[in-house]
Image (cartoon, rainbow, N blue to C red; front, side):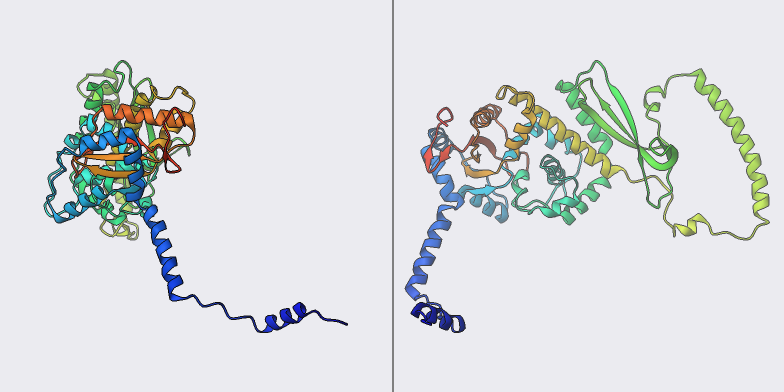
Length: 430
């Protein structure tokens, strides 16, 4: 039997594979040079260079803003942050900056002026509640879920290099809740909505829901309709208009009856009869209690519930954090509705207008600080209809002269990236 030379070579290689070819020093240097050029081409500075040079609108905007004075830095950290923005960067939440329109219109900074300035603290009330507001818009279901985000990504949304970490945010939020400013904030926000006619004043709906409580605190019980029995918990009231837009939320203990706020000064004979009846029942219960205490003294000693709770006070739940978080949710809802109102002039299909707007406001993009304005270039959109609507929305928002509500005092200028394959493609020609 004849065996080919190739077969013999394969048998030899199987047991003794050839040594890999060693790479020379020059080849390694050439590979490093190619990798460096690829990284440079994909850097934010290079990606910003194309739209700023090829897009006529952005080129003209750059020339206008170059004559304005950049923001002044008060600390070295702010100075470094401003320098980074002047070089340009890519952020994941560029579209979220559009929500600063509503924060500006509603007076978010003035709303939180009731909180005193914390000397020596990097984050103030504006930063804490601003982070929560933007996290709600971005779809984070809770403060705990912020552990999944890099702190540097949402930092620019509050005008800082970094947003507070999850643990830091929880501590700051607890510190704000301890000051018990929520009633003042809720009233200010509700009045502001009414004054700016963001809420229809003709008819209001008051809807109450019971929220069960399963903790160790001994609190008042309420009737839980799902299980059809009384349970420890709190009542949540929502006041909305005919369109379902919330005026405010109110979370209170079951000991509180919201109707008292409206009927406190009104004489009602039905209430007087109830009071008389309750007083009679109270007298009967007191007599029964005396008999029970007499009988109880004859029984062996029992463990007191106070001993079970180990000194923990029997009081109402601390609802301040929930009230503040609900307020931020209310702000987030009205902010989206404000953008929807503007977007209706840019997009004519009511069936998916909110979905398309959400796609735009959650879009990543490039940013660059030029003069006193932060230029935001959203990533391009392939669909021609959505692309045209997004570009029109950017122009309408720029007419509003939006300012970033946060530590960094800069104006915002929104644009859509029109560069494809290193060439400028107009909206009409896309």
